[in-house]
Every structure is written in structure tokens, then in C-alpha cells.
Amino acid sequence: MNVAALDGVKALTFDVFGTVVDWRSCIAREGAAFGRAQGIDLDWTAFADAWRGQYQPSMEQVRSGARPWARLDDLQRESLVGLLARHGVTGLPAEAIEQLNTAWHRLDPWPEVVAGLTRLKRRYILGTMSNGNIALMVNMAKHGGLPWDVILGAEIAQAYKPQPECYLRGAEALGLKPGECALVAAHNGDLHAAAKVGFKTVFVPRVTEHGPGQTKDLAVEPGIDLAVRDFQHLADLLEC
Image (cartoon, rainbow, N blue to C red; front, side):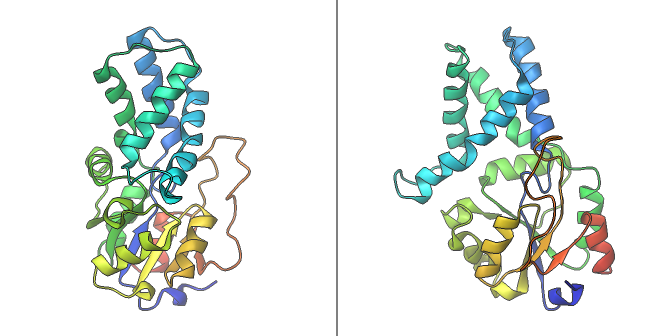
């Protein structure tokens, strides 16, 4: 793996959940605050894991054509209501459900992210390449100070990763060829899917994304162009 593989890249696109932001700690924290306000006593870290566990199955309903296009916010809300019901929590007012559902809009970035992105922005177009909808991504950016140039991903493509349309329509929106774009992600599967359509690929490990017992995506897999320690390391290698 060599940084020269990124020669000719004009845009760096980023997976967001897990790669840019620490969803697990933040959802557990927001859940605990919600529980105190509503008088609900749950293991909110386990709840965060279970809620995230519904992420791929809910999107697969859209990817497979079993249901029409739906924004991630709407899929997450459906998962949330079902998960609360399984814990015996029903009858909450709609505004309370909405407050907890939009916790995904208030996720904090990993410690080095903002500084690293700020450096990378000097030379590259920076964009999301996320399954999150536009409002979610914009609100998260405002919350965490994420200096994106553009919000790309599922909603503009009307397709969820790893469907090729998600990556390709992002490149098209920028007026770039796939090979002029790179995906930065903590998930090997996402990177392999992007590589299949011509994107350059950068792996950054987030070995506690799923907590201390994480067993997946601890290291880069063959076929990825570059592996870095974190966003600051990427900025160093790209001389930003």
C-alpha cells in the first residue's frame, strides 16, 4: 500500500457512522438522559447496540425492493419504536420519540477528526458518503463542527451502500470520474464496494466502534489502496 495510489484524487469522501463519529457512546449517553427524563430504566449501551443492529436489516428492505425508498431517519424511527416495544415501553408521545430518534443527529466526532478534516480541506473536496439522509448529515456537521464541502450519499442517490449507485452518483454530482474520488472508511466491506466501481480507498481503524469486544474491521484487508492510523495521519501522508 502506497500513498501514490491516491495520485489524481480530487475528492475525499467519508463514511460517517463509526468512521467519523462515535455513534455507540453518544447513543448510549443520549439514551440514558432520555431514560431519566421518561422514567425508563434500561441498559442503554446494550440498547444502542441493538438499535444499530437494525441498521442493515432496515436498509435491506429498501435495497431489495421490498419497500419504496425511505430516508434513514424514517427507518431508524421505525426500528426505535419496535425496539422500545420489545422492552415494554409504549405510549410515549411523538415528540419524545422524535427527540430520541434525532440523537443520531448529535453524534460526536472521534477526537482527531475535525483537525484532520480541516487540514485535508486545504487540498481536497470533502464530502460525506453515508447512508444518512441530508438533514441528519447537516445537523451532525453543525453539532460536531465537521467542515464538509458537500453532503453526498444515499439520499441524493436514492440508493443505500453498498449499492454501486450510491458511490457513482456521488462522483457524478461532483463532475468527477470515480478514480478522482476516494472513500475513507473504517469498514472493509464499504471500501471493497467502492473499489469495485473505481473509487480509491483508504482504511482507518476504529477498533472501539462496537465497544471493547469488537472483532471485525480491526485491520485493513487486501485490496485496499491505503491504510492510515487516523485522519491526522492521512493529512500527514497527503502533505496537507
